[in-house]
Amino acid sequence: MSFPLIFERSRKGRRGLKLVKAVPKAEDLIPKEHQREVPPRLPEVDELTLVRHYTGLSRRQVGVDTTFYPLGSCTMKYNPKLHEEAARLFADLHPYQDPRTAQGALRLMWELGEYLKALTGMDAITLEPAAGAHGELTGIFSKGTHSAAKGRGVLLRSAGRTSTTRTPSSKRAGSSSGRTFRTPSRLPRLPPSVQPQGPFAYLCHSPWSSPAASCYPLPPGARCRRGET
Image (cartoon, rainbow, N blue to C red):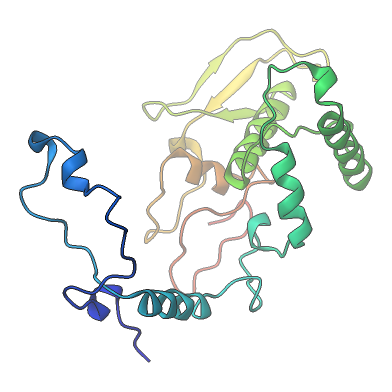
């Protein structure tokens, strides 16, 4: 069933609000040189039509309040309404304010970090990423740093050749070979019908970066397992 646009509901001359005479007109408040030559094309509706229009739109929305929303992102999971109210209490925090005035927020972040470490078995965590994609990028950088510390390859954009650069070896890695910078020309071949979306696609396809997932579309019927084409 189609839903009419607000412009389709518009009727010339209709108004949802009538101001008292004491309120000056807009054209009397704006200098002539800044006024439009042609009035803006805005919908003209009465108040009841406006209320019914937006109420009707709200009933057409699909989200966590109305149904299952299987996108998987943190923003797509249902959050108790109380959390939305509580989040406003943190809205005015500033990174440079006196820590003594932010003890509640600091305690919340510290306890969250302890919970995450206990759940994942990690030695440390970071709350620096500000969004899902930011967190994924942080994970890739962390994996790259770990691989470099172990003396493994690190993917970099280049002219398509492989080079080896000597760097101080990590004591933890116990390697004296330095870092190996691999480029797409030396990585596994992609399926012919797949167009890689930049070096990140190769990183995801590489067998030595197992935490990453496939980030390019595969043709119908094609199968791509870790480290294979």
